Structure formats: C-alpha cells, structure tokens
Length: 441
Ligand code: SAM
Image (cartoon, rainbow, N blue to C red; front, side):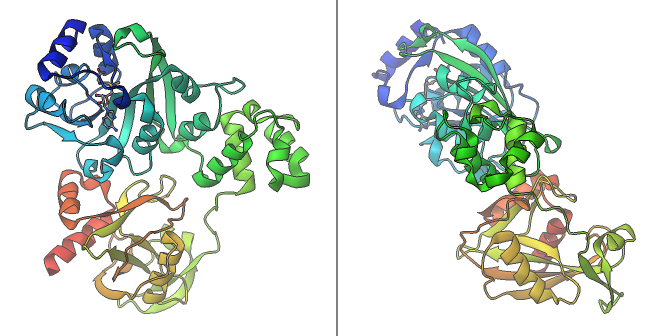
C-alpha cells in the first residue's frame, strides 16, 4: 500500500494508528513484495499473517491461491480486512495472536508465518509461533532492529545471548536486511529488520533436553562479565577438563562459547540417554504366549513377535491427548501418536507396562485404565501384539523431553479431519487403532 492509500483507508475507517497496538503501517510496496517473497510460498502451504493491519503484506499474499489466516487484534480493522480479503480460502480472525489456538493449524498443510510484528509483544509472539506445538516450518518477521540483531548474532558479539542460543537451537535464523523507520507510517522511533527463521531438520539438532540447555544458557548469561566457571558450579573441579575437551579457555565468559560448545556443555551436564542395549522383551507365539526373553535388537532384526501397549487418555470433554514423538526417535520420528506407547518389558504384563509408560513418558500417576482393542502382529505394528488402554486424565503432563516433542488434547472430530487430510502426520499404529475404534463405535 502507498502512503496515500494508507491515509485514505484510515480516513474511510474514521480512525488513526494506535500506538498501544504497535501500529506502524508499511508503505513501501517493493519492500512489502520482497518480504512476502522470502516466505517462499509453495502450493498447499497455509500462510498465517500476524497483525495484517490495513493489508500492506496481505495484498501480496493474496496473489497466491493458498489458504490464508489473518490474526488481527484491532476490531476497527477487521471489517476492512474482511471486505478486502475475506473469501473461502482466507479467514480473518479477530483477536490477540497470543491467544490463538495453534492446534487449529495442524492438518491444514505446511504452515508458514509472516508478520510485521507489533514491537511490544514480538518476543512472546516469537516464543509462541516457534514453540514445539507450532506447526510452522518457516517464519518471516519484521522486528525491531535490536531484537533482530540479538536473534541472528554471532558468538563473541555483544548481541549474542540466551535468546540467540535458545531460538537458534531449533531454527536457522537469518537477518535479511535493515529497514529504515521512514518506510512506516507513522514513523517508529527505531529502525527495523526482516528476519527469516527456518526450522532445522532432525539431523541438525543435537539430542538434548532443551530445558537443561535453556536453564544453563540463561544462568551463563545472567552475568555476562562473570566467568562461566563461577556461574555453573555443577562442573566443580571438572571445569578445566571440560573446558579443554570442548575447546574453550577455562576463563571463558558466556559469549565466548559457540552454539555447539554450549550444546556440548549441556550434554556433559546431562547426557541424553542412549537406548539401553540390555533392554529385553518377551518373545511370544501366535497365541501371544510367552516363549522367552530376548534382547531388543535381536527381536527387531529378526522380526520376532513381542508385545506393546498404547494408552489413550481423554479429558472430561472427550478430547484425546496426542503426543508428538520426538525428532530423535529411531522409528516414526516427529509423528503424532497415542497419549503414550511402548514395549512390554520381559516379565511384565500389558497393564503394568501401560502404567509404567504413563509415568515414564508423561510423568503422571496412571488413572484407572480399561483394556480394549487388541492388534495382532503385522508389519504395521512392527510384529507386536498391541493392547490399547483407555483412561481419563485432565493433565497437566510432564512429557519426557527426549521421547516426546510436545502433546495436546484434540477433539476426535479434529483428529479425524486432520488424519484424512494428512495421514502421514500420524504413526501407522495410531491410524490402525483409530480405524478399529471407529469400527467398534
Ligand atoms: N502488517 C501491517 C503492515 O505491515 O502495515 C501492520 C503492521 S503493525 C506493525 C502491527 C499490527 O499488529 C497492527 O495491525 C496491530 O493492530 C496488530 N496487532 C497488535 N497487537 C496484536 C495482537 N496481540 N494480536 C494480533 N494483532 C495485533
């Protein structure tokens, strides 16, 4: 939109920009088109724009035939957006983007996020739309220059800090270019910059408990001038050995460590559990009778029949808690699955395994569980007899970080639509259980 168009639109609406809503409207068309091009919109993508305002970016987004969700807080602008862009493929949501329910976006195609963000809430908006529950694969955001520089900072610089490291662990961040205040109306007091964030693929994220990493980084940067060894007392006398092994000086301060040295440090403090090679399950016959215990690898390599459980927890509203498997799982990484699932250990029965899995994967005391559907061993089940247990639980859960990426309650209607649109988002066993439960209903 040009400056004249913005002024005319505001006059027509009988309104003026509101400072408390961070309203600075972009009036450089070339920049708007270029910003949209950074989103790299592909067929099937679902684009979400945060704070569309009068539509400076939206008019270029609308040139694509993709689905578009516009999240705008200002009720005065919503009718204007509705009239200009509302259609069967574009929905205008009136409300605070911080309250937007991310679960709505699952099953709606690959999600990409764009926004000239209101500066007063940029940090919580970034945290929300890059969280584990967000389906976004790419974000293009216009931010206050200072924040953009912190996000994209290199180690050893003054801008490098906890935010750089915590966002950078899961996202590739690029500061694309600086925008002068003069391209906005009204002119903000500070310059801005456009940042792209691309979600890292599994091979590029070191297996690590993100919470441990984040806590350690925040402590390390809590006093930038202090040497790290004084801020991370857990290493005690080992510090010289750790520093030498990870390749930084004993006297290092937080900003001197590269992102991979920070990850290695967190890993040293809390090693990500490798799979226990001595884990054993019972091998069973065609009638599910126990034959003998056997090592996990032997069972899997030889396709021997064994046992597993899936647990479905519903809340009082009948919604089912789904977990998203961790990106580091050797089988079916990153897909959505039953509330909890796992093998029956040697000597254990199905019910005991179900209760153990709830404690281990979701960190809760098991409610009363009811056994139900039983699946026969097939290639889909990984040659497992699977018993499905159901129970009622309202959460909250404390999912095991290296097992579970995230989790949430979803209505059965949502799950069925999502599965129809995007079956690959779910584990094959979950799909099978759902099909069987629909047949049984
Ligand atoms: N995208 C437009 C542009 O580039 O001209 C407007 C950008 S302006 C910097 C920020 C926009 O975010 C405004 O339209 C404002 O009303 C909206 N906004 C402010 N707070 C919001 C919130 N919590 N949720 C959604 N939109 C919000």
